Length: 504
Image 1 (cartoon, one colour):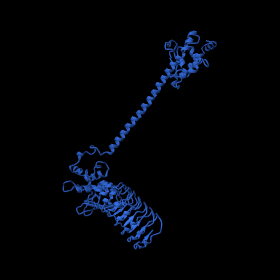
Image 2 (cartoon, rainbow, N blue to C red; image 1 turned 180 degrees about the horizontal axis):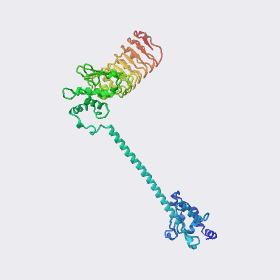
Image 3 (cartoon, one colour; image 1 turned 180 degrees about the vertical axis):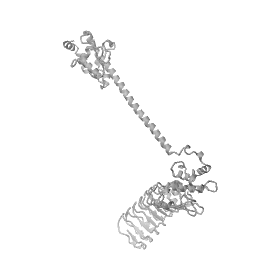
């Protein structure tokens, strides 16, 4: 077909050419990166009446390729159809179709028919290509999700293995490692007693409880056997002291401190270092001063039921909290845990140790405050909490129901005012409230503290004038109120403080 005939045919069918040019881009039909929407939505001009069907004779064996003159018409503005088609096939990695209908080999009717059905052919081929693209995209998406699911499954399996391994490391040894059947009758009898003292830790490798248990089983030269002239109290006492020993790094204590621990009777003629006993050979005191204790105070300490004095001071590496089992020590009179590294608050069980008359917890990292339950400590005379992180109000009314003589709260974050009821502490001799956040004016009733010897109120937020009633505190020896917002002059009655050595 010559160029003139092509031009005449274009002139005779301008509408079809216009529709092909505007409604469909032939290159896009073979573009693997074209949007699938190009094949999903076709121009209305390509829709056929329902009674018309596509004749397969006018479609090549490559269903997505236009054939004959229609291919020529689509590309007649630039390059012959066969060249453009071959180029597209090469770009797609395909050989040219084996059957190509050449120009001039068909009648005009066939050419017109092909032009009429060309849009349908392209629509069909484009839809097929779009479907292929959608299928490929779906496959890729399924592969991605399958990969993600596989990774998550592997991660879950690894997590389960890790958790299971951690539990296996932390749980008590299995019977395979330490079968109970291998215990001797003596060891079983000991276990029955020790399990009542230590609910946990007896099977935990490296724990102070297991180290103490094993020492009793194998290394204790006394080889105590229950019900053979040995009381349970003696066994418990020996075991608790050994738990304390291992909890505070006993093997690393200063040489002079370790002394005779692990040797002989606890309450022999030469007691274990730091231990004092009653006439009934029960531990009544445990005291260590800068002896190299490193660790924590074990809960088992609460089973030394005859303990009267517990003093562990000047050990910066003695950390952890105050055991709640302190409340079981009904005979405990003195609790001195100062200049250490203790943390946490005062356990409420502490107020159950109602025999306490001396509590010194200064220079730790303790927090919290004093509760109303402090009134239960009716024998309390000295409460020293210097330099911690205590806060909140001070229950002066409840303290008045104790026998308090020394109240040392310096260097904390206590707040509030001094109430009029301060007069209800008639036995008070030493009141140290400096370095807190107390505010307001001093109550005039403070003058009724006739036994008060030392009053320190420095570095607070007190305001107003100093009441003249302070002159009636005839026992006062030291009085300081620096760093407040007081105004006015000192009352002349201050000259009546005969014992006052100095005041600020």
